[in-house]
Image (cartoon, rainbow, N blue to C red; front, top):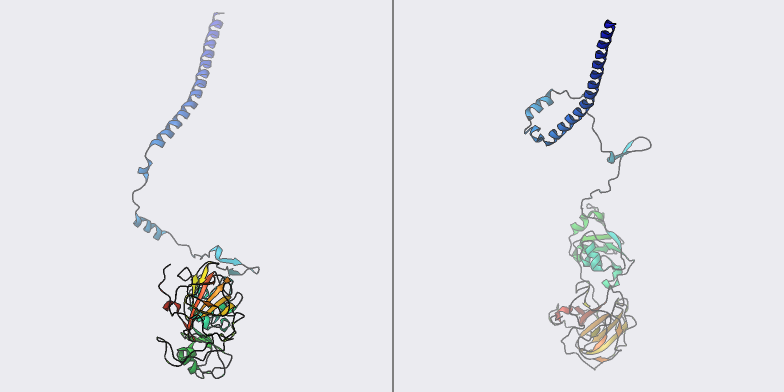
Length: 396
């Protein structure tokens, strides 16, 4: 019995030791997991606080890289590449280049005579500026304008010269030498202009052919009012006989219009030979005086007064066919006339005597006009004169 009790006691001790070991292992496993997490967290915090910039090299050994490149074997072939946006495949599988929407077209001299359809707001000055030409070039190239920029109308097809010069419709009897002399050009320039299509070995032109005279010029055609004048040119103008006046009923080739008064006015109020401004404003708002525009367009709003620039007799009052709409012409009795165009109102009648400064009408926008203003012209004999030469210095 004693041996049995001792054996049992020893077994109980071994069982207690085994249970204690199991408990200790369980406790160690529990805390070892927490210890691992704590160690990882501590490492992350330490790494985040350290200065890693020192790990970046301050220089690169280019020679070493060159050696590496030389020792690296190159591929047997390198295929070129094409930008995908530059090509496209057709249905047949062939590659075609796509259209470049931003293609640059270099500036180059235009040789052919072009065409332009006039719009509602166009003027000869504006069209000339649009194509980099002088206004005279537009007038000289388009007989449809009848040498008067006020005959420009929307819808007209105008011929546009490639550069400044004269467009000439050849008529029977024209010669290259004659055209060169008439327009101040050179025969070789006419022959050598590519778009004229003239054979330099056999330079011939025919009636109906359209030629361009590069750099050519011509005088503008002027028309008088058909009143009796003597043949003595006024001081300052070219000497020699004056052109024969046209009949009173047709001061222009196309006719004067319904405003033409009966002829035969004599006596009455005469001018003093000095002019005042015919409007309150003293500056140009449209066309100035030039070879294509024998007057000035004085600024003014519709309804503002138009004044007689000098005393005289009204010889034209009403609608004109010159492009000026409602128009008044005053004969000042000293071989001078003044014209007032685009009026919105008329306050005088045929044969009426007016004195310098009298209101004769109201400024407007009638006829072929691009805006309200007073078109003012001055004639001496059969010649149209620059109004700036006879008006006093502008004051306002």
